Image (tube, rainbow, N blue to C red; front, side):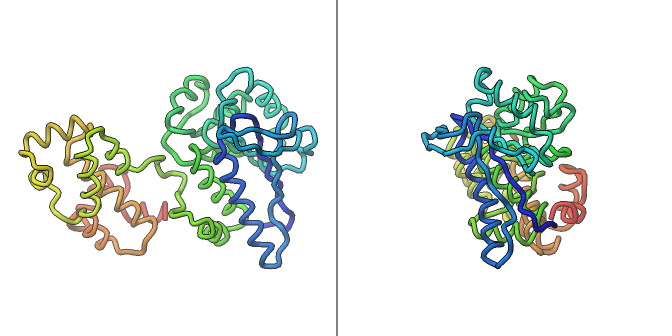
Length: 324
């Protein structure tokens, strides 16, 4: 660790997505504020700059004051963060931003993007040969435009050397918390997360949307409600017969309609719900493997172990060691 404050530069432009910028900015501001409150020197200096400087209008209409990039001594910048927004897709708007990044960004220790800010990094030639992520809706487009880049569209955030990329909006907060931990340790990062009332600090390997949310995306509210009910009864009987009774259908009709609405058989969907719950408990609790197997509906430790090896290729104990 070092006592010198690290300068974090946020690249601003008209049409940026507000939370992509102010979410990470607030994380760094909270971290340095906490340290100052304890009598320590500031650990971050925050700068928001645009090509011309002055007021920048975010996508929501929020106006943000910015310095001109020409006034920034790039040699003093530790980290550059590029938010998402319309300019990332607009060829005319993104060209000068990408040109500035191409000419200056490599002088920083870290170059980060939030959401479709990755498109600006790609246009600047910063993603060549890298493994990156972005918002899941735009992963295929990013891959198509930059075939020499490996896009992992379902991750919260990803680091490959000096390049850090993240999914959209709230994922920028997860990324910023990880950067604080990388700079100043887990204790401060967790303190910031608590202060910001972040419910769960997500690891980068976590998928951008949970299986329960994905399964509840069905257009049929009957099955969406059933998934919500099943989440509260994972240790109970969630067989096709039991679920069909709950839904007021015959088992055969239920199985057919469920698969048509959700895209999976009831058995596969329930195992995914149980697996998702078990993963969360392994990451965030000190419950024994036996207790997790019971509360998540796997019956016993062997059932839990078989499910993890089948779905993830590792045992529950290995998963806990790797991701907790």
